[in-house]
Length: 311
Image (cartoon, rainbow, N blue to C red; front, side):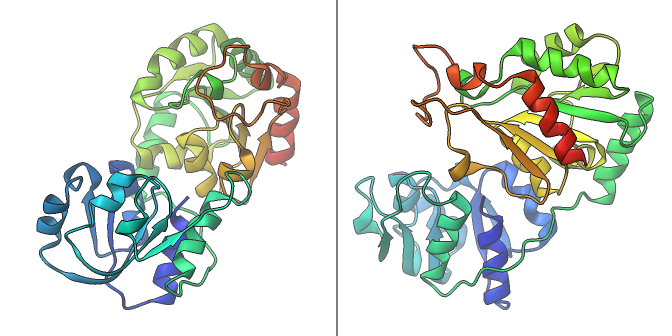
């Protein structure tokens, strides 16, 4: 979501010294050489810790993308002329520029970040595909060789979603689409993070011959390369969807309780499948009345989306 802003920053202020505070997953973007230094968010939660890590450097501005109080508080002791972020969470007094964001879903989140950047003069620019490194591609090729799979002769399923059950298309439907892919001559890799392995293993087993669970076995870079080589990636609204889309891979994304208008993955070959009932988007992790938003999405609808994006 932040890549358009990061590329805009670099294009607008080509000589700027940019430091980024982020989760370990953000290090995947180091290959784009958009920043000078990266700091792990886990080590920058307290103002004194962050000020010490930054070594007393004076910054012209800070763009604070998370809307939480703690993310603004962490910068309190740093030498920053302007602190730009979203208003709310009782944190506006910590910001020099507190921007009231539009209602959730009215503007795509990546555009919201660009609007924060615009307050310090950032101009939007074209965002290139996120490219797998040679090492990533070699790791992906070795895995495919070990499984006797040719490039393009496989599809990727991503049945996990850390947010909760309201983002997860039913288990049986992932099995059904996997069996249809195998019947059409595709092998299937059931992917995800380590926490998704308990979901991936039974799905691969129920699909049967031609399916393999790789959740928790790949780095982000290798997974990026695998998505690029696959015929299609079918996934819930999850990190895997954003990874595949950013790399320009054919990506089908299934949305449930959340808003595709707000957080759909951005990429040149993305198809969103969503059948929103009157109660959606509710942004709930679980639902007391049943997951109508997900149950309404038939296997045939996802199959049609696959044909569309692959073409």
